[in-house]
Structures are given as C-alpha cells and as structure tokens.
Amino acid sequence: MKLDREKLRPIVLVLTSLIFATMVYFRFVHQKPKKTLSATPAKLFQEQTNGDPLAPFRHLDFSAAISQEKPLPPFRSTLPDIFTSPLASAPKMNDRATPPEPPLPSPVDLTRIKDNLRFQGSIIGERDAVAIINDQFLHVGDRLQGFTLASITENRVELVQGGVGITLEMIPHD
Image (cartoon, rainbow, N blue to C red; front, side, top):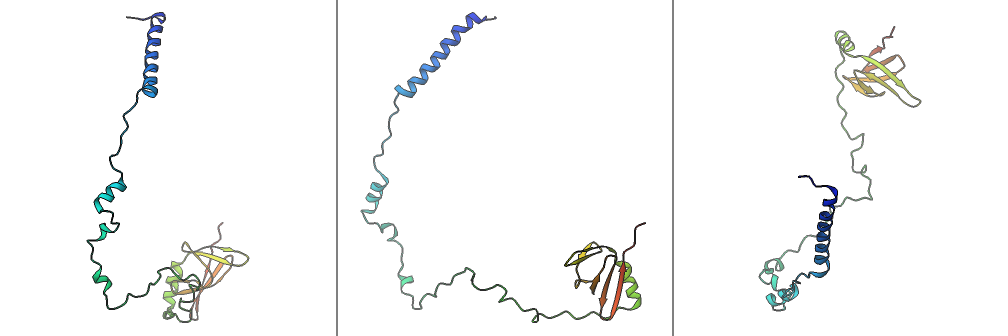
C-alpha cells in the first residue's frame, strides 16, 4: 500500500496540530496541584525540642572533661616556620663523616678497572665540563668505582685515587 504525497500531507498536518495543541494545553492550561508543607523545618524543630536550642546536646555529659585537674597543654601549630632557613637546621658539610678512602689498587686491579671503564665523550662548556663514562655524566670531583674524576679534556679524562691515577682516552673514529 503506497501513499502518495497528496494523501499524506493532510495526515501529517493533523498529527502536527494535535501535538502542538497538547503542548499548549499542558504548558498554559493544565495546572499541577501545589504541594504544601504542613510544617516547616523550623516548626518541627520547635515542636521536638520545646523551644530549647540546646536540647539535642542535653544527653551528653561534659562534667568529666570540665573537672580535669591538670590544664590542657598549649596549642602547638603544625605549620612550618617560614621565617627560618631550612639550611639552618641541616648538618654542616664539616659535621658529616667522610667515608674512609679505599685501599690503593694493585697494578692488576688498575688494569682490570681501566678495562671496565669506557670513556665515551666529553662536553666542554664555558664554565663546566662533563665526561661520559659508562653511560654516566660525570663532573670534576665526582666519584666512580672509588676514583675521583680529576680533569676533563676533549679527548682524555684523569681519575685519581690516593696517589694513583688512571688516564682514559677516547678512541678516535676513522
């Protein structure tokens, strides 16, 4: 059953009119019954407490807390003091115990240590230099396997322990 446009147009018009009329009726004509409270919260509270504002707390006994013989300690703030430097309470560099120097390595140990260290490059800046050894970025004065990094140049670094030193050179790429 096929409807052509001429027969369908009045049906759509009637249905649209019915929907519009229903919307107008429920929006402007139909009134919902208003809900009224028989008592406001203030009136309910007044009736339950007989007008006494402390009635909800009358069953609590504060006499033990009031009759303490020793006074309460003074209130202490848990906020940090922002007017003193956090470095003032930190231990001084001279107060810290320095780790003992490890014993001097033997020539065999020096060869083994030197073979385990790979000097991969250096970054030389205006104020500072960084050496890359075993994928670690080290500055002058940093420690590595008991040795202290003494100097950094473009192709060489020197590590010192006690009076013994190791020189690592970068292998040039051909």
